[in-house]
Length: 549
Image 1 (cartoon, rainbow, N blue to C red):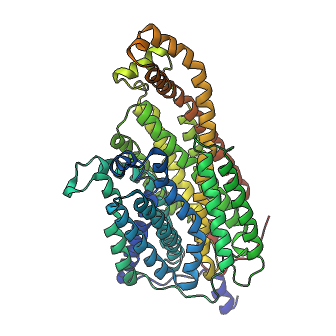
Image 2: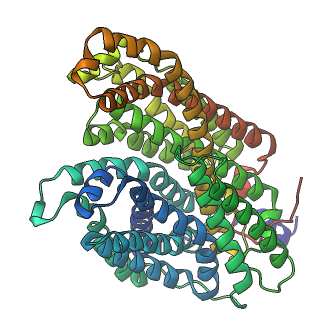
């Protein structure tokens, strides 16, 4: 073999990394992690504070939901645009703009004295998050060399994406429970805590990140408009569908989903014809990425549903306080860190299909475990709630909840790390920002769709069970003389509340079972179609030959 052919056959050995470079990369990872954690935890941190916000700012229950929906709409709808802005104008610049916008919006939310200002600040937070999150993911590919260093960086990013929701519940419960520290209401701190984090991240970014190459082209305005409003329509429609006040048959739900689909069809037509599309078709044309995007739309949907239904179950049925409920999810954060760290080491030796496929099976087993939860639905137990006893007082956290929370974390850590790597695998340099935006969009839209579907399932079975237990409960209450002690309206309201508490568990456990089926569906897709090898993930060459099917 000639000297030239021998050198070509040998794998390229990366140059040694200096101590200064290692320090720069470490700080770069810290900034990316803080930004991603800040973006993700804001999806849940305000949830626990909603009753306090409503009381202070006199916001009715219907409008309180817009504190959550407004953020999700702006974030999910603008992710593609945010990703493409990074490709065109520099990812470091867009990252900095995004975290600064997020910090300013958080400041406005923290000092808000009216409902419109607070809701506007939440939407503005979503705008900042939609710029910062895809830019942060793209910065990993441009800052960290392919191989173990990039794998570790993706592991940390994936862990932040997974534990952010749990940290949000814990932090929200703790801050909300504080008794006016520094003369500020606790709920306001759930916003204000982001201000120094965002400003510090933006200030240090020029020191630890090199600016990415700006690519030729211009912003696809028609594509940006149709794509953004199409995604807004879907996210809003799915959010309404999952709300028991509206449901799938509501006219605005149908109109929003129909408009979203129509706009996305126009978006696809525009993207196939313009010279510089917002979302190049080639991003989806590679099978590895396409499979990763589909799986990452299904898997987080089931995980977010776990947080939603389990947090309601342990607070409303088991009787945990908001802070106690937040700490009940702490093992999830620990499990995610352990699993993501292990996956980042294994990914250099084990194919992504094996890691992600196994992880999805583990997560499905955890959801099946949650589906086995049960409470005593007898009238005597339900009436005991009137004296302060929790309906689910017999539920043992250590044996019935903790094992499956931890198992879910282990599974999702094994899923997020390899699929985050494969979702941006061998993207062209000019597409890494929008590719990252697609990955985040899939998670947001999938989460909204999954929650809408599972909420509909839960509501259906909750109502069915409620119809079964309501007659016996009402008779027992009348026999106990409760009807004479309350006004007719109050008696009816009390019976409705107790019936809901008794029936909710059946609805939630059925939703967990459907979530397990969704996990298994994603697992089948991964095992059958994700065929990229771990050796290929360690390369950083040009995009491989496009192949579909």
